[in-house]
Image 1 (cartoon, helix red, strand yellow):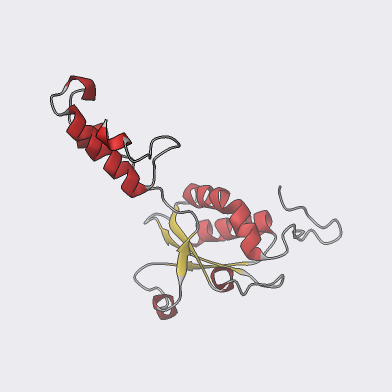
Image 2 (tube, rainbow, N blue to C red):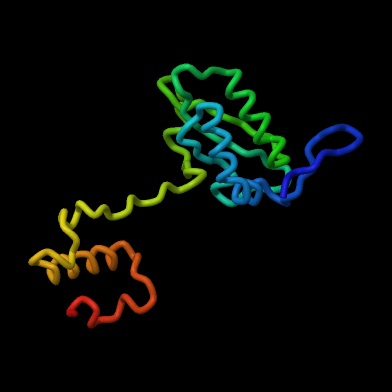
Length: 163
C-alpha cells in the first residue's frame, strides 16, 4: 500500500487515518530509507508515541547522522517519508547540540532490534552428540531458550530438560 497523490494539487493522499498507523505500516521501509541517507537510530516521539495523534497530526522523528551526512540528506529523507506516509514530518538531529526537550520526552525506536541469537560457541566447540557433558549442555540450552521465551511447541514440557 503506497500513498497516492491528489491529481489537482499533487499533495500526498492520506491512506491511513492517523500518522501512527502509517508509521506502523511503513516502519521497516522508513528505517531502510534512513540507512540509504546515512541516518541511524531512528526513533519516534510526540503524539504518535503517546497515542494522542489525530488525522491532522505530524510525525516526529529523531535520528543520528553519519559524519559525512548533512541537511541535504535530511531534507531528502523527510521528503521521502512525507510522500510515503502522506503526513508532514518533523526530523530532529540527535547529536552534541540536540534540543534539551529530547531529554524529557519519550522516544521509541521505529523498529525494535532483535535479541542476538545463541551462538554455538556459547555451548562448546564440538557437536553436542560427541561431547561428554551432552546432558548438562542440553539442560543449559533448554534453560536459556526458556528464559528468552524461544521454546517451540512440544519443546517446553516439564520432562524435556530431564531427557
